[in-house]
Image 1 (cartoon, one colour):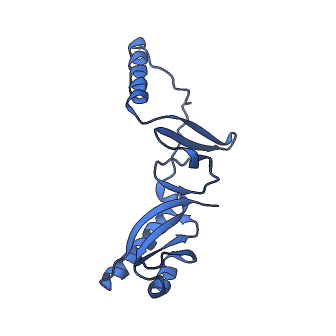
Image 2 (cartoon, rainbow, N blue to C red; image 1 turned 180 degrees about the vertical axis):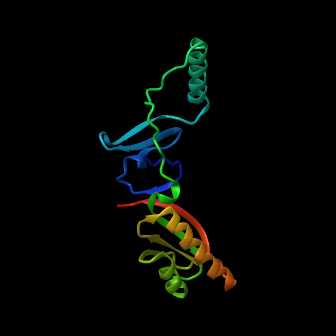
Image 3 (cartoon, rainbow, N blue to C red; image 1 turned 135 degrees about the vertical axis):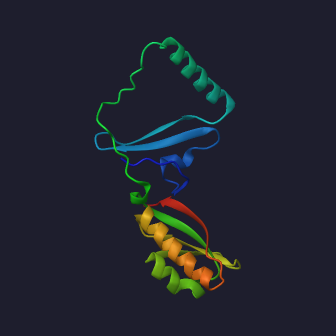
Amino acid sequence: MTAFVAPVMIQKNNPLYSVNDVFNGIMVKGNMLGTSMFYGSGAGKLPTASAVVADIIEASQNLEQNVALGWGAERQPIEPMDQARFRYFVRVAGSYRNKELDIKQAFGTVEVVELYGMDEFAVVTSEMSEGEFKAAAAAYDTKERYRSDYGIKQMIRAALQ
């Protein structure tokens, strides 16, 4: 089982793309269920207050007993985040032309996004584990620091097909 909460870059055709304002959405993928989306009010004082009051009422109604949550006794291990696999959108200071070899050496085959007139570019990596990405990013930043250059400015996980 993998579970995480983090910003993730998604495409416009992803159902989560339409979630905005005070609404939350979550995608769940199970071996029996397939992929399902749950959507509803989230942040904001009224939805939060409603949930807190409901929890207090349920707790006060069950002071002498444990409320079963429907989980079995079998332990459900959660995969370490370093094993989760994503593509990564990485913003880098400088010019791609000057850093192409180092980028490819660190991250392998990438898609390049250049903003002309800006002293930065971005790459989208191939799919890799979080642990592989962290190691590649650290190696790249170490090399850039050695050159007294700016390295990675920002990273975001990407769920792009």
